[in-house]
Image (cartoon, rainbow, N blue to C red):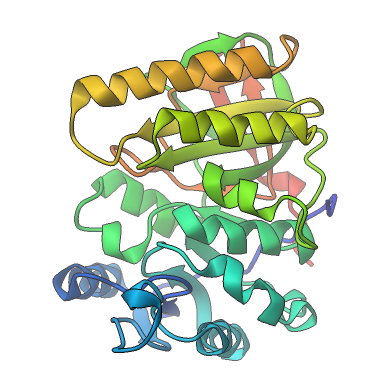
Length: 316
């Protein structure tokens, strides 16, 4: 784990945001176009890189392009001086496949914001943990129209170097009490589990772990959380922030049952002295606020709020 992360330069109106598909292809052209227009209406230029929509190829259409092409698209955006930040169009599956192709030296050479969530968790943690560059866990382009306007605004503010340093948590559920401070890591549960035992695995000791997931049966969530426990990853944490866990559908009762069972399993697995806060507005359904991975954050039990600590990022 890199102990200090750099904060990428802030965007200004008129700057260019690069968009690409690091994993799955975009499924809805209208959502992509609406997302692009929202960025443009906010005063930014947009540059598309690589294949955005499905190709008639192998992989049953679940990858936007070949591994080499997707990795090359990220490299081109990173080295393009006109592109000041990068936003994933969507997640899906595939970021794990391009990790061996990423040029760590190239990416570490300059800092840019990369934003996304879900499968993009893999790239976000690669940047913050292996390259020493903070990244943004937040909406992807294709979720702009379906998501919350405030969530979009928070992402654009983060691109511009402005963070809501005290985050209210109106639906906070304290599963295990206490305050904690640590560097924020994590994101999608399944993606994090897939990194275990690979060269891109890192220590989570003294970090605050963010978790969310969608479309997983409870036994799968149980299996993944149990694997984290058996791998020793839940024992050295400073704290855990639990976002949305949902079935992938709109059955309210089923989602509530899954949520409650996930919370119960976490309480069974996580040592009692480690604070566990649920109800964090992050995930695939409902709100999805932007949180900076690699930044120090504080779980303040007195205020019941999450505090971001931007000064913990260097500006080299």
